[in-house]
Structure formats: C-alpha cells, structure tokens
Length: 154
Image (tube, rainbow, N blue to C red; front, top):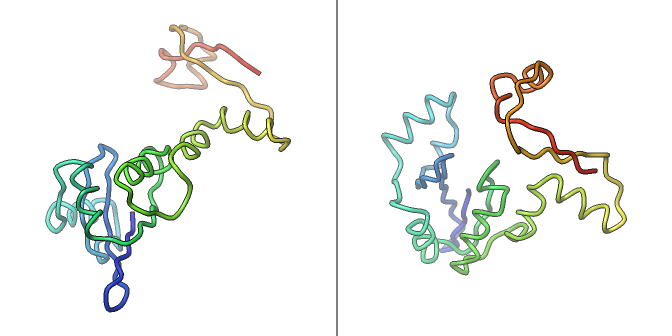
C-alpha cells in the first residue's frame, strides 16, 4: 500500500500488510529488495510494526491525505483493505469494498457480467462438500484431493 501526504511538497509513505494481516510502515528503500529473504530481513530490522490493522488505520487518519492501495491477493483485492479505509473515512484511489469483494469471487463476477450483457467464458462453480478418494481428483488437485468434491453449477 502506497500513501501520499501533501505538505510543502508531496511525500510518499509506504506500508506493507503481510499474508497474516500484520501491518508495517516501511521505507521506500525497503520496497526495492532483491529477494523475498532480503525483504523479510529488512522488514524485521527496519520496519515499524503496528499492533493491529485498526492501529494502522488510526495512524493513516492523521498521517495521509489519500491512499493508493497497490496490494495483491487476499485483503488487497477482496475488499478487505478498502473496507478498512472506508470504515475510517480515509480517502483512497480505486474501487470500493463491495465491488472488490464481488469481483474477487470469479464466479459471482462472471454472473454479474452476464447480468449486464457482457460476454463471459463458460464457467463452473466447484464447491467442497465431502471427500472423494478418486484418481482423477488426485491427478488434478495433487495433495489437496482429499478436500475436493464436485458440485457443478452452470
């Protein structure tokens, strides 16, 4: 997540939210790491950790003018970070939390597109219901086969 604060000029503040939803204030130099291990080392030694996402949001309320969320995957694309910003009235660039949540669910997104007259590739919804000990399932899902049972909707 990159955030801008206007003062006498424009300054950039960088924040990182890890997959476990731990938040850190990082320097822009930390963004340019050579390897994930290098980034992790810099995170442990140089970053300012926040106790919670709420603490990060409270910090942002007074520290920034606008947020540019540039975060990939869960929490970044599923509406989580947008919901956090909305709940604290922090202005941000991009799509709102409800729309992000709907778009993150690819099946729901395809239904919404079809509903509005857009073409969408054929798709199937696979839901986990119970275990199957099936060689085809093992082939396609590898070690995760035990968690998959197929219930199709089209």
